[in-house]
Image (cartoon, rainbow, N blue to C red; front, side, top):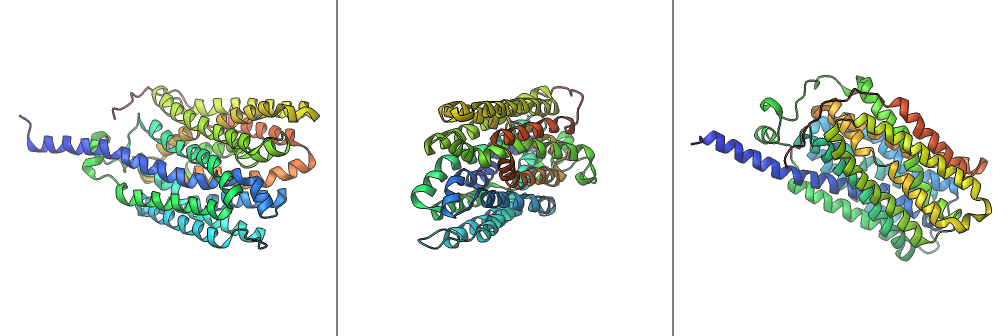
Length: 434
């Protein structure tokens, strides 16, 4: 006959096993709502250019400001998450982001003869990025606290899948909203999504208690939030920096597709709005599927770094092929719209498939108590790329062509290969039961 403490411990474990999926759901929703902004707004690039009277240089600037805001704020938000906890930071960040987007819907939209200046639009998007940078590290730390090794890769990949899922939803909705109802509707819908996610976080997100952490699978009865390396800052770990820097470089082809893929399809291949939206939605949907699969696969095989290196090589090959086909197409490019759409979709999916695996590796190296900082380091590199890539593309177009843009993206993917550290294959860890 079991004693009362055994029954209590088992009940606590069952509660933890059940509640962790709610926490993962909150993390997914948080990333999806913000991704709809930073990945979805660039899909309206053609309408941004016409509605705000921008040239390609101005377009690159305003799109880059989103990435700059996130890159600058990621590390401070990550350090604050490790100090304050993920619940407080996520609630504060989501609420403030919703308020910033609502303000843009009211004051930073073209209306009649009034067109906001490029500086006002750029500052508005910078503010959205600065506030939204809170989402990544805080939601990732929450997931790491509730899941254990052997299932974290899958859980983190599901969370990271929210990025292409939110971006795909944005790609389907935002261009249509911008073309039919203007940018007030774009910003208002994004603000509503962030506010609704904040309500979910208020209801379900909290850090696990001692008993819950033990039930969720912490070894030797220690809380998941602890770790052997808790006293060592990830900022002094060269292995974490290599994964973070490699992630940033490998993001160049992905960001090139997300920010200027619509412009390439519109200007070069003469694709219509429906074809452009479908292509970008395919990129995000394919990336979501690839991230979930890769998380579970690398959990079983213990080969996260090898997977990231393989994605680097394959991405370089796909974008080199796109550069070659673009250069050879010449004046016949308008007849190859479907070919270009397919190549953009394949390249974009491959360039996005590794994110969940990379962020799981970062958090695992740092241990959960320092995961906010480690994830912020990775996101800082990634979103610094989101700032620099849109700024670099217009000069490349002015001195070269689209084939040069895709060739540079291919080279950047190849550069990531030696940056990612090699690792001996680790022992397989069986996937934990849900």
